[in-house]
Length: 508
Image (cartoon, rainbow, N blue to C red):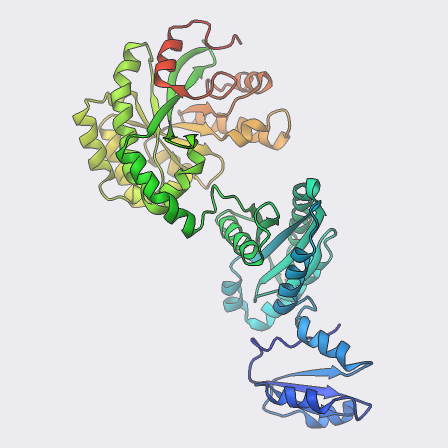
């Protein structure tokens, strides 16, 4: 295996020994260059001489055979990681720059940054020697993955890969490579009689789709990797401007969001909830939209992440509650019999005045809390559990109900479901989409329905789009659903009009 010395990371107690049998290969220029480095080095002409040259106070040493030409050996020294044989950070920079420079209009490239989760804690527990052996094993597995190019180690537990493909096939090939990477990294590692299970997080950015610039591509892949780290197990994320917004984008859009709130540019759309027994509208979910004066209607996935990151979601959330309170009286008069769901972000629970502010809004607008339901995600439950529990119990005492949104994608426990005032579980649309496609998703849907029944809670299926999905849900006892199969979210006036139409909802 060729070796390299990463001079930025080489500890001072490393002795570097060149074994040169030709007696004259090391040029004076090279010797002069090495003398400028911080590590200790020595030139020897045989292994016997090298053994005699070993210093007792150096615990680590590196024997480098000088063979063939100096340029080839020196290139390996400059570009390869000594522990794994993969390219080092300098090689990564060179390869990525070169690949981007010569990327044709019909080609695309994906940068994958792979990080080992909790590796520093592992090093602390088992020691750096075991950690180094593990890194070498990980590199071997990564190198065995087909379809990738230019494996490099750019940090203690960080690796990079490049994937090249025609522009029309880059996403498909990238996902295939990621699946292969996870497959090879999944089995346990055996190091010094330890059986070790570690997970990885993979961030992906693509050229030219996300950027053609060197720095941007690295930043975007790292940003996606950090998002992937929030998931459990082996995980990956592809850079998405909707979720991975940088500070400059936030700074640019924040003032417009403030203006939108002040100038009343937000609108509420309502999506009906359907009873699958009677096929009648029994409730609705309130969904915010931004009616931008120049860009038209902006969907929430384009501005909610900025609002959460900046904290603007707190006043926007209060506006939603207030507007729902105003709309509720008209919806009740139009015959809506049950709950209107209002989303609460995890960021809103960080506001210490959440429950007291909502209580004031309820009293001010005489909101009928018997029809008010707050939807929160599993993520919110784990951000600040005591405060979340306090807010939920306070609002529940006022008569409001709670539903757990995107259920099945987080970490809810039976104990959590039993101790919190959660009345409804909402099956995440990703599982509903798998009905008829994935036996695993179908089993998850059946399990959630059964769990809800056993815990005496209601269950709502989100994202119903096909008759096959509807039939499956009815067969397995799901009583409530919403999705495009029934209706897209629509403005209040249209919703009220359609409530009077007995043919609005498609026949079962």
